Image 1 (cartoon, rainbow, N blue to C red):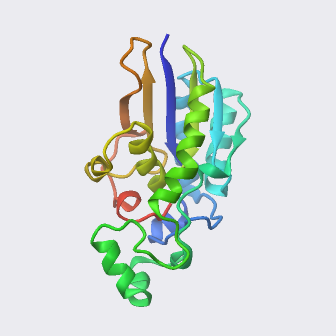
Image 2: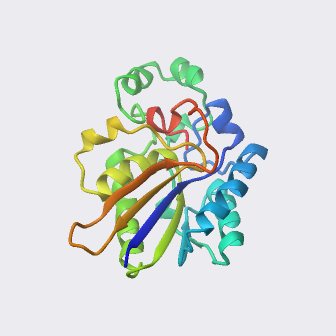
Length: 219
């Protein structure tokens, strides 16, 4: 009677490829992102999910549409599942970020997830909106049921750690999810609670690319 939560990062966008911070900017999937979503969807569909949730941003919605087609489920959208709002960094490449906001860039290089750019959400703000949403979704998932959530790289990484109750420092040992990579959380009903069953699975084995999701919330 395993209860399962599958957390999926959306497919690639042109801004992902260019290393531009997306945040809440509504950038859709590029051709590669569509191909990734098409390849991922039947694999997720084979898990026979019972419910499908998604961020309401275009790149997540478009990814969710492929899962909906593969499963026959209707996606439900929740703005709490959005990526970090990256404030004034939105649309900037890393070199542009360094040139325009040198102090924030140095802070980011030292480990601050946004660098404190004006208008950007803090990790605490993202956790405060997203983790309750994940708990609500988890609580609505019954024994022997599976729920799929389509979201974004940076917010998934920090909120996975918070959702599992791990120390914040554990997040530093996790690389970010690849586009259309997923995480599986399970509770087997044996009293051990929720456990991480798999991390950053993808439909096609590949050499992992730049870890934008953990080094910067490009989304």
